Amino acid sequence: MSDAKTVVRCDDAHSYEQLAASWRPGFPFPVMNGPSLTNYEEVLRAEGTVGLPEVTSASWPGVVVSLGNPVAHAAAGLLARATSRPHRRVDSAGLYPALEEFEAVPVALVATAADIAALGDWPGSRHPRFGLVTSRTDESLSSLIYRTLTLRSRAAADDILMIHPTAVGADKADAVAMDELRPLVRGPSRTLQVLTHGRECCLVLFDGLVCGRGTAAPPAEVDLPAHTRMPSCLRGEGCWRQDLGDEDRIAASSIDARLVVLQTCDSIAVGNNAHPLSVGVGLGFMDGTTVAVVGTVGFHIAQGPVFDDVADALHEGARLGEAVERLNAAGEANREFAEFGLLGDPSLQMDLSEPRSPRRNHTAARETEPVEDGLIAQQVILGRLRSLLPLALPMDERRLGEVERDIRRGLLSRGDGRADALHEVRQSIDEIQAATVRELVRKAHDSWWGLYSDKARAFRQVSSATVICPVCRRDSAVRVELAYRLPVDLTIFTVQCRRCGDLSSSTSASTDFDVTSDHVVYVPRQQDGEITCDLASERDRAAHGHVGFAFVAGGTSHLPRGESRPVRVGSRSTRQETWRFRLGERVQAAEHYAVVASLIEGEFRCSNVFVNVPSAA
Image 1: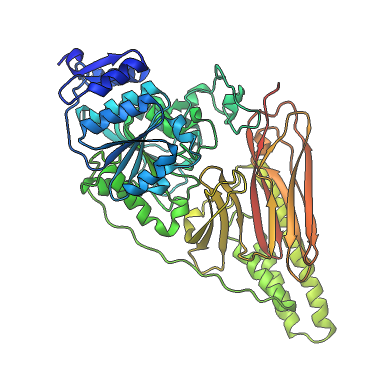
Image 2 (image 1 turned 120 degrees about the vertical axis):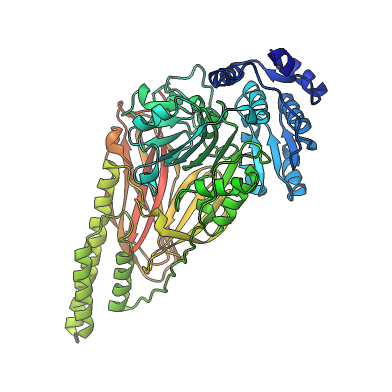
């Protein structure tokens, strides 16, 4: 069938809106002309399809809701009529009431990414079977609707499994490095399944990355406020991975994968995006030939690959929205670090593979109540320090054993011998804390240090509570309790925001001592900058320890070294520590990461700081 009988090519938004309003099944389907439609034609032609396929009517469950500009409403009307679903137009004030009204059925929200970004949060958190049918431009949104409705015309293709070499399941992956991925994505794939490290803008491998923007070249136009979070490429200073060349980056939009499953931090970042929409990796795929992205919302700790869980659900007849709902239900005990979202139509059906065996459940470890009195109090502090060994903290385990023996000898002593032992133990613990923070500052500067290292899967969420984000001041943050799975008294309390990311972590449940820092600072090159932290105590006794700051992987970016220092906070008092530094002219105009860490009486706390270096005026 010729294109003239299957589609009507529209050269502008006005003609698209007019033709969409009158379209009925059986008539040529309106599609906006542009690079997205051209790209789709090329991949179909490569598969042997002659002309553009016809949109046939179908009956899908749920409702289509549209928000924003007239093109989005027109596209939603087309999708609704082609799939026999009702269509509801809403404004931003009416969206959440509509999601509540249609809670029992899948909701496909059609809108441009810019209109969703104006909401300030990911709307899928309000509905269990929600899908956001979105793209960056009117033309690509029009093409996405057409690709969704003609998905069944695509030829058979293989699945691609890409897993970071240090992650669980890497031995079963098709690709663990860019040189292995590149030849696989030269042709079409049914699914691209990814478990790796990531940022809002990219999927990261040792030797390359998949880029949401698609280029590291300076943008033609950037008219954003100076105090806007954005990666270095938008500042005209190239990719944040300065070790990579152009050949080491693959544009997400260039990968022909119909369904993309992403287990990477911030892969679903529309509404909850901290950076401009032009860099989002999830949206990058939607600008290509992808029809759906299942990804993680916010900071993510992978307990293991979920690809088989998605495949099992779809093989059993579940539609995409229900498959994501099952993922979130299965991860309920750890949901703040395993929240999944969907870009694409939640009522779309795909069959991926045969079902697999069910996963085992694990129980969480419990935290014990400390007891603080004399040598026994030091034993408690020592126990806290020993519990930190599973984390990526450079602590001397041999020295801990020596102090433990000193405490036992002190408890068996009498008179002055016990007092001398207490003095020595306190001094030894102070030296251990000093050495740990000092070495952590050095290690963080010289590497991509992370608190969990490769132990993230050893933690399980116990509880969570909504809090106001200290950065964006929205109610999009949570304080999460994570317990170590093994019989070690290690619990981490972390605050993370769907928009701003991972903010702070602490090994103490106590609210009578707190260490806080600014999470976003702006420091021009060749000017003095500073990072501060406030230590506040409501305790009846003084607290002793050490605190430090470092730029994470600062050594690779010409950033100054951090430093550590001893700190004493009096009873029921506060203290502020400030680190001053000067950024040289070789420092890239980008958003750099720093960490403020403290180890006080065996309790470890750290805060992430985003240091933004603006471009020269």
